[in-house]
Image (cartoon, rainbow, N blue to C red; front, side, top):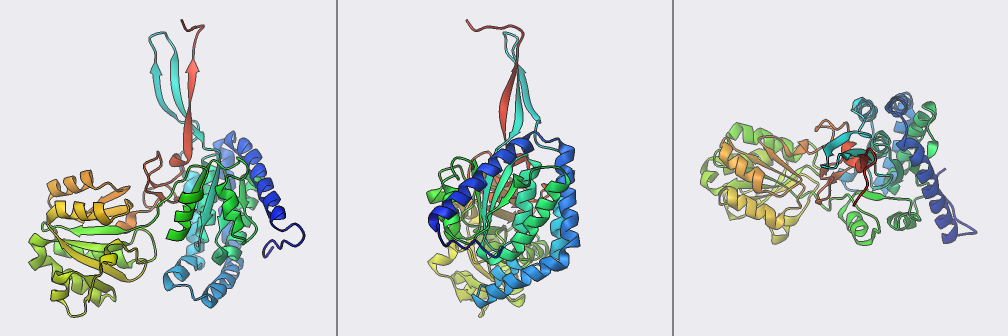
Length: 430
């Protein structure tokens, strides 16, 4: 359906619908938690095939979303996130296959130890329960989030942004067909069938105790709201203010290659570099060519006094630039005093998402990776490797920047909790 039109019951009707969806997801999750790996994998591979066979329909549904988004004058970076084509749909289907091929995370024995009284204790991985995912723009999150929750034995309640409404609805239909083909309950993956923003509030309240964890995927305003209002635990990152530090010990050609990819491969993703930091000790050799490389590639550069001096095309950076996630072909550039200066800048302005260093000096790389308190810290590689698929997780449900057990790309292993299984032989406690 296009959306849920509430006439007679109004808000009460919506609340009842959402509470019912939560109860259905909870019931289905109990079945899914006990499903054997082979059954879950059949659901994923079948869903992948449905995505492939319905590619033309998906492109048509996405065209409706794109037309509406253009009418609303969404930014180019948002349009890029929203767009689907044959290649992206094929990639989405392949992600489901990749997730199916991963080791099953449920039932893993994480630790075993024995007490002096003979009790044998195992720590065993278990599903989290029901995971609520609230996301904007990216329709592929429907597939990734649903598949990861499924693989980890969790029910999923998905709330797609209004921008991706038609695309997400059809992707969800493919996931449901996969569940049916494998003999699993359709309600293992539930998609909220309305654009009404009140649905977000209901999910943050836990849908009557039926949601165990919330994962937001979207802009700063959404994530701030989720972190402020959620009454269940949250896996989230607020912003991706990503830094690339080029040390005086860097290979210039390598640095240029990494910088261009880190910033411009895709500007609208959270792993895109937003600030370039250059070691003052290597500025004479590094700064001008790095800035020129960016400018010649069509990237706007906003720099400090040193960056302004090397190229007339550089614009002056404001105080706000150092804490801005551009999600566009814009970057801020600043000189810092060595590795420690870079670490201090990142600690002051960073978002604990992803930060990288380019250097051939291993001691400096070690110091940077040890002391930068971000979820992902990279040496001599693009910051755009901050991605669950690139980590071998098949896909990710998001990148968590907090300090709970799930940090960095949240894949199937991070979507489990654990319980203690205790084996005895008649022991009693004194």
